[in-house]
Amino acid sequence: MRSDAPPLLPILRSRTQGEVLAALLIDPAREWTITELAARLHLPLTTAQSEIARLETGGLVHSRKVGRSRLVQPDLSNPVVTPLTQIIMLTFGPKVVVQDEFAGLGADHVLIFGSWAARLSGEAGPPPGDIDVLAVADDLSREDLYAAAERAEARLGRPVNPVLRSTQAWADPATDPLLDEIVRRPVVHVLPTEVTAVAS
Image (cartoon, rainbow, N blue to C red; front, side, top):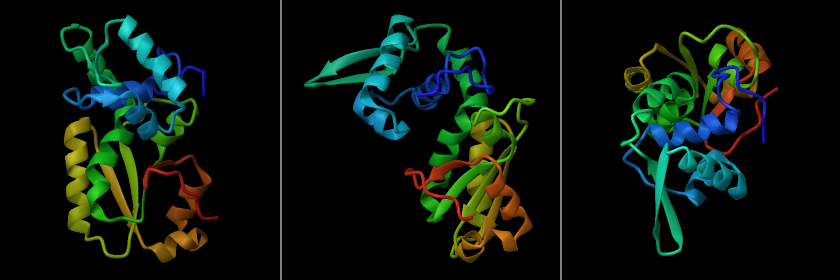
């Protein structure tokens, strides 16, 4: 687990903390089991448990027992939660929102690239102003792609720039100047949720 303060929001202790907060705060009506949260974020269960314990101690989330599971969600009675949600949406929210809005398109891969991906990976620099998204698919209409980007943009409150490339182009990125640049820089794999190797 990374323990360095993340460039996207250096007031947080770690990138993991930001990702846990994003998953919880972006859909505050949802109750998560800690096992579900750990699976969604690809975290060890003990790490997810520790993060939730800290958040609950600080009054940012509350939990309840149902059978053998503990269900967790944001504590909306805490006046800090609403402004914190806005901050998290602007910083760690893009991965969760892009995953939600692009999930039903049938793309083989969806990646976030550009300045936001660079900051998430730990590169220092100015705050990203927009979100660059690559969808790799052969049968995806541009209308559907742009509609997903518009939904994500409305939720995030910042421009979302979609790019569509074929699976053939993705398999040989050196033939496409934009793809060649993308694979040389940090990217965030959004879909499928399992991390896949970038073509090289």
